[in-house]
Image (cartoon, rainbow, N blue to C red):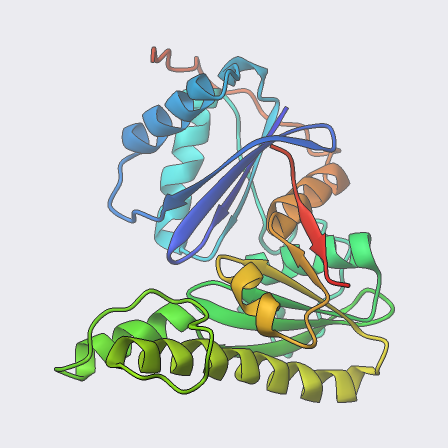
Length: 278
């Protein structure tokens, strides 16, 4: 089995694959201050709750945009799983040329998403990833990572309103059902939801003009399903796209066999879904 770990600025998503099947997945808060043992014990306990045996893990692959956590996760893999983790970084085979002026500036998760989207949907395509930031990544018909767009995420915008406007409360991010709010909460929800739906569609429209009208659009990330319901251009919502990309990259690096180290620490202690819009 393969353990995939996607470390984002806000959330960390873990998935366990047996061959091509996603057996279990978890979404955790990214905690920069957690120790090796805290990550190790938490991960092993999640395995126990899911009825999985940690000793059956034969490989670990990590995509991280939080560099301070990389050493912690590498040591956790060695201490608790007796394996050397493969990090998606320069030198790892992805099968996707990166056309950025400086390829090292591209977040690992963006390349991973591109690999999965091109493998599953073909190209040209655009991946919209709703995370701390919303990223739009363009993949050519040849499977090249061309570049993209980055905008502040919905959560950031919501928190900015709460923090900088004394009389505005925190609100749930959802579709209020109408554009004209009749109270403060409804007005804020309308601005956040419809504002971001139109922002996303506006960026996608411009990107499709550059890539061509047949460009596919795939969304992933925390608010992908919510925004896709109002979007006219998002065609597919793939919740586990990044985990799938990690699995694909692992397979492309199978010549780099997992390295067994030390003795593992003993601790007692669903399937990927894709929605296609009609």
